[in-house]
Length: 420
Ligand SMILES: [Zn+2]
Ligand SMILES: [Zn+2]
Image (cartoon, rainbow, N blue to C red; front, top):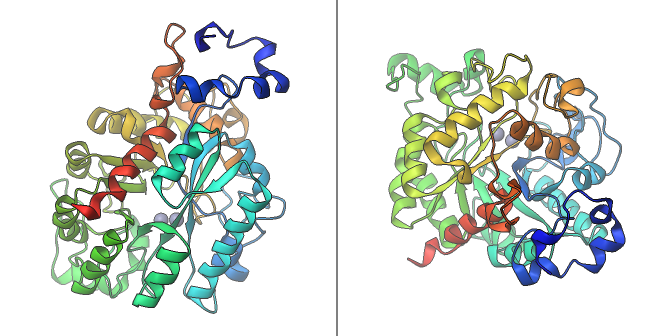
């Protein structure tokens, strides 16, 4: 029985009995089962912000969604139910602890990891993958994969003990070294407009040492500190994949030789394109070229405030049209197989306003919760910005073409980087 002989749209395919009886097929043919959702991914989703943001965040992971619109910033936009509705096969669950609204950064991260473990215990269709091989065999067995990431290392990964606990034992596998404010580890990417003041000292320094990139965008004069570089080395040695999002251009230039030497693919879990945002926080064309050269993965952010300045791909208004333009443009440089979404759900930013002609709920509601992720990918496809190879009638559905599979393959290279 070849998978192409299965009528993809018949009701039989949708029936649960059919799906259960034939679930061994992908294992044999190494392809996507027609009952399986296309393997989408989210490279940056905050699931446990009730712990990470303390009293400033409204709602709990294990409760109903509290957000109701794409404009909601601090109300919960993800829970176990939306995770299962999301059609996501790989989710990078990003841990974050706010320095003012949590009593202890480390304890907040510990509690979030407990929540992740509890979630996979209650939902056996999900696994918490601590290495790419485990993720890969999970994918082949139709499992959904959670990977732990940490946004902002300062105050959490400081000592050998911290690394033992959070990396080796508790399984954090992706680290966004820097975040919103310059710290002991290095300089952060300046945000757009007034938000540049998130890093006040670097901003003041930039007035005296003005620096701009080739596009005329203002740059943070600060790069990585020796301590930041040492931590990056330590993390790579422990098979952690370094996320370059939020790093200043100088910090990235300081990290690049190390990443090249260790042959680690370049990872940007959540970024807009700088050519439109005109702020250092966006990935520049030169940085995209590096990803194309070195290999890597880029997650684009479905957020109106990050997509500012982007022309819509179709005459329809609405945020997903801006995201579609960025998807098309980034694909022209790094190829579609290195592209993903990094939703930054629950990350304190707006998401996408309602659109039209996408044939999804994004037309009426916009994108505002994690459960719509499958529809977000579908909207990009319907707008012509994303062309998954496997959907052609004549072609056999292939797992190798799904973003989930491609990402895990790239992670495999990051995991073996330290041995070179
Ligand atoms: Zn971020
Ligand atoms: Zn975030």
